[in-house]
Length: 417
Image (tube, rainbow, N blue to C red; front, side, top):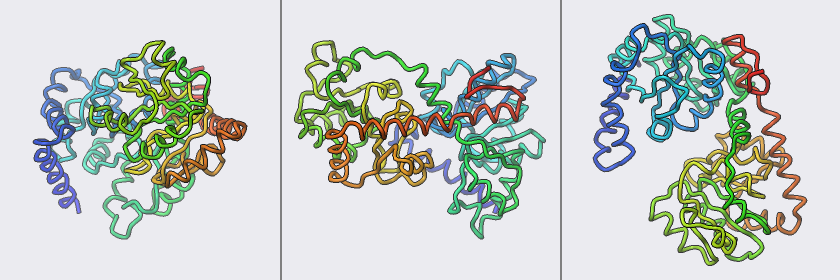
């Protein structure tokens, strides 16, 4: 199985190289990988000792960020290395000030693994949520480097729990401790003999609470949202826009802020063509234009987490594609959240649905029904928002529990005492 695994990684690496000829994301990944070892050899201190934190992409990084910042606050002398697998994480956070080194993770091939660990000499490794690279975990165990995974969540469908998953079950046993989100994950792991497990919850809740406390003031968005019920549509794709834009067109009592997942000209043109009411791009907006517009299109990145605070209800995109985006990022502001049908891999979405703080839709008709209820009885919308906010704040504290267990630092609600 080990040889087959290594062959699979090699094939994946080769395919990325082939696809990079036409794919921009793959091209960035290849370019980044070419620089990994020269970057580390030039910048890593010879004695190593890094706390190495690995996140697949931006979302996982945000889950690990409260831990990184708690470490820096309490142990400023400790050196931190952050690695990413995806360009969407690396490109956004490559200048993150709290890390001493930031780079891509070399492909999980034995030679890469040994060379990487020889250079950085980590004192500790922390993986976020779903990262189970067999060669890295085997080599870390061999070198007796304490290794953890945080915010992990497990489902029966994963390979670890299949009859043919024996090799990957052994890989899980390399972790010094697994910090998981929920009791079902702990029970699944127990069934396969993995018992060094602690249920702590999801650090993402700590992160969105922190983001809310540091949210930006956006005067133009505030002016736009005044006077009418405002729907914030975040990380939307065309299939999402086919749902909520027709509703806006038919309801003059509603305003809409769209922060699409992609802001290339083709996607922005698609949105404009569907709109039948007045719109303005954020990059072109001023006081007069936002007061006159019915739709504000956010054509830049980095504002969405602050924009939600100006909304009465949120629509989080991705549910008609690979999966919904960041639901807690909206719910933390105490507003109800609507999303598409592909949410079942997201624990927080399912729990918000169960308690009444969020709503899922499969069609325009279902979306229209929910919005009609909100617009005709704002108390229903307000109550759902209160439930959403209470759910988020009732689940913070995972970062504090992890930090206490690993480093003996007492924190309060994810912040230093």
